[in-house]
Image (spheres, rainbow, N blue to C red):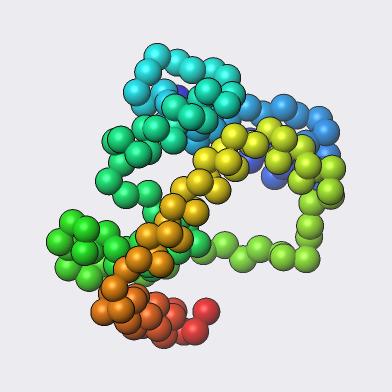
Length: 158
């Protein structure tokens, strides 16, 4: 079962994020629950225990956990981990968003409370990834720098 389609709520009703947060309680599957559900029967609550289970499953069952903010680095590490050829890619379906529209502090606080265990899981994964990056040899570090420069030039410096 996928996430509920909430687009009609904001496309047709013109809801702001703050109004949406105040009026709707859309409960999607968190990453934490998804990871645990992949291995067990339905787990419907987030808790310190489900966070610990998800971290243990990452460590036992996942060969690699990439971080979106380190996409190019992740691809090059995966290349070496699995013996791939250089995985060139094209960016597609990139939205144009207005960065000047910021949610209110109360909306940010609400989302942080709702997602505190996912945020903890992400923080752990990101820290582990950054620790891995610190250990990679100079030749792979240079390959990452070249790949990032090439990717940047292929998309016109954006």
